[in-house]
Image (cartoon, rainbow, N blue to C red):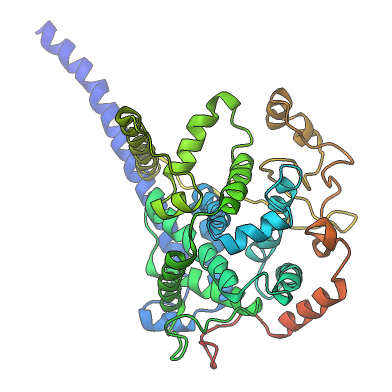
Length: 425
């Protein structure tokens, strides 16, 4: 009797703990899917036929929700990889090497941050806002100098646009706790089609350009087919690809200790497909089969790690609360009218040297690693003036041209539906 009572008393805590775990998992599921379903149900797009009416404003809101709350880590890495993937195209990487942008260690960090700033402005603020349109206008001016000389083609711009539209979906479907819905994919297509139009990118090369697209999802699928064919023709090995990719990888792995760099480079390589890896000239063909097997095992383990993270998030992680949303750009300018970044990757460009930024854990880690940290008077610590962002050769130039472009975009009321009133061509 005593033994039986002891067994029951031991079993009771175990069953209670097991029940608590099951209840917690069910709670995680309920809260995660409840928030997603509630968010998407707030928009009037119930069927595929409704998608053609999606506005750019709604597409922006859905995408921003995914980037800030639902999948912030993965979408941020996807955008970094989208920029990285463009360097597999020689016509793009050769220009960067020729201008020494993103191919030399003294210029690459700032050039990388400036790109983040310009894209971040129109991804972080509504499509009909001054900030979003000022970011597009400045970007258009910087591109126009190279377009006029034939150094940037429409195909290169369309391909770059395609990667920013497609990579987040690919990374989410591969790495996250759930896949995107058709409505969310439609939002990506609607938003980026509108951005392409604001950049005056022609879609004539796409298959359905003649007949038009029914909605953002149709446009996104057509863009994916075009981008795949473009890569087959243009993504080829080139020394400029490797030079630019190596320097960008150094930025992405800025905080990784040198002793761990070989493993970190393998992680980056394992995230590439064979086509990109060959174009970057990162392909290693060892004669030692044991080494080849080791690399295969490493890549398999990376994939397992991705699946494990997705499993843990799905079953054991509560949804990210609003106050913890990922935010890279300050919502309001400072007293001098400039804007600060809230997060930095490599050098702390445009980071406000507050007490927390200078003396917090991240700053101490940077200091111990011999890396720069926010310092008054250095790395644009006063913030950035959007109309002056870009390479030093364009400092203070193009202000009137960008202002005219911004005014033109503002007059278009870019928050509407890009597939209505003949806007599907």
